[in-house]
Length: 412
Image (cartoon, rainbow, N blue to C red; front, top):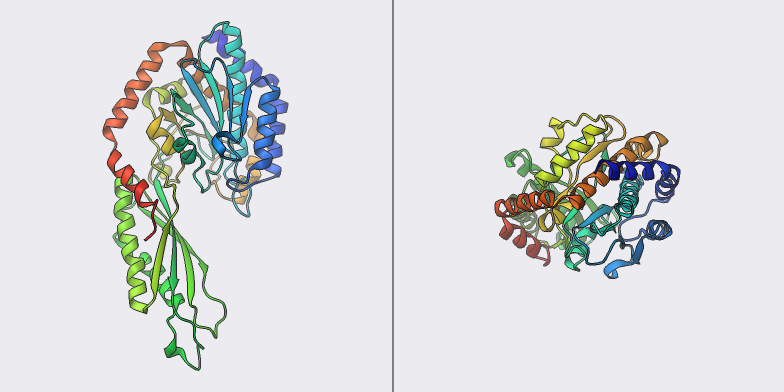
């Protein structure tokens, strides 16, 4: 095992310049969800050049891909996941260019170790998952069977902190549209029904609701359309809101409360309201205990001191990797590229493109490669992973998750 890890690590080090080039090319050309055509082509070309069998536009998703090494029916089947979409306006403010680099680097290292082992020790997949920043690329891949037969799924996310178990929140995305009646705002205001008043009341209703929410329930939104002109009573307005909670069951409660607030605003103003749910809610992340232990072991081997940030334990983001963790044993740790810098900021965008991030990024790839090789080399390790996963399944409210997914598939 030590020898195989050495091979993986050396292979990653030898490809460091090439890997940085991949990351930089993605960083320089940020693309939004399901529009990552440049990143898709860049990554698939690179993986094919390095000896992987590549399936482009995987499962009919134009910017997804699958790159494999090993026999198609090989076991265990280890998947390393890549993300590569960016944020509006600020580019790679979440560092997905580095997630892509970690994924292909880990894959390259594991492939070299598998070749050295001289036998069929499993199947390796580098899975390209688009649209994490909205859109739910991983959810769509799950629905299309992309993770069928996968034994573990691993990835790691850049941050301002090193955290072995990043607590994420389940999330739904809503679009709320109010319909009123236009009229001259000065001459005939009594003829109108003001959709902007409804939108403002709906927003304010949620602001009042915050006082009665649990500390780890989150709501945040924007007004996308507030009307056309001050002297025309707005006949149509639109808001976008994110609702988050620690579990699918709690999120269902929050959705009901928020829906009542939006509907009350419509009733008070005489308007009508339509609430549309994004089809792919994200579930909370469930970290596999054995895989987490392996992560800590390999991280400490590189001298890393992993901590749990108290702030992030109570307040965190969301990811469609949570949905993956419901169907496959998974981990989603955070690795620090610049201490304390918050994601989704211009400062983090700069950090994600800085050469200073490279050393830690390649170390993270080596850690994931070590985990993959542990699982491939030891049936006992894989059995422990599966036992932990079964315990997690028993402790989850699967019915709540199904109800949440169903609710978000219809409009109200």
